[in-house]
Length: 276
Image 1 (tube, rainbow, N blue to C red):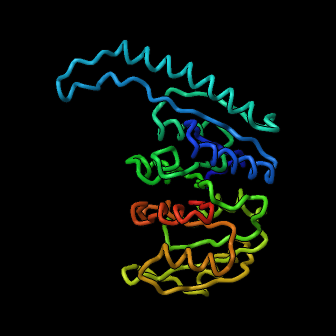
Image 2 (cartoon, rainbow, N blue to C red; image 1 turned 120 degrees about the horizontal axis):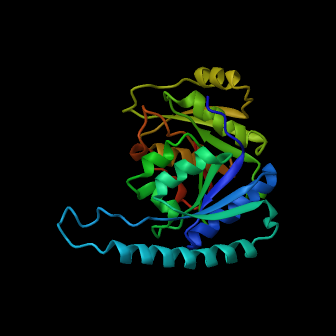
């Protein structure tokens, strides 16, 4: 397993949704006693743009536009950091890079153990996780992702989590990475697996309990649910347990992000959602 640290990466685009991500990251960083990396990604000029349609493309003008945007965003980033209390553990920078590629470089070069993204349904950074064609690259980056909106419970008040589990080729690795940063955040851990009629594999309660024992996790409870609507079943179970947070595993080769529909869970407005 690739060993990661426990520092937090927060991509920011200065939307309201980005502030949700920053606020939740601050609460989480305080509990973990770790650092936050705020990064604004500016897409570089594309020298190949227009070639497919044989259109004339002014690369120099595009470059000037990118430089102006960089200067503008540097001012916004400075203002954002100044607004945050206890900013000594916050590092900020602007990178001229494509979003998914830039995230991968941050994971490679920094001590990142979690990515935090805000979401508000207006095509912000967090929304790109659910809608962008590069979502699979981000979601399978080997690092847990936390997606949150303005209605999620404050992390300082959360002491319970519902963890949805599915059979997956990378589950062991991804679960360990998730535990590394979340193990001490919650007192109550509720585990649930939703069996769908179309699933190629099903999971028994004893199977989950054996898996958790191998990872030295003592669950508050383990539940198997039969349902044709996995996301709704997960939300209803979390409601019943009065959970403060949700986690779903959707990283591996045998599960596709398009099948996860995590935006349905996030848009419920009740829970921050870890994707591990």
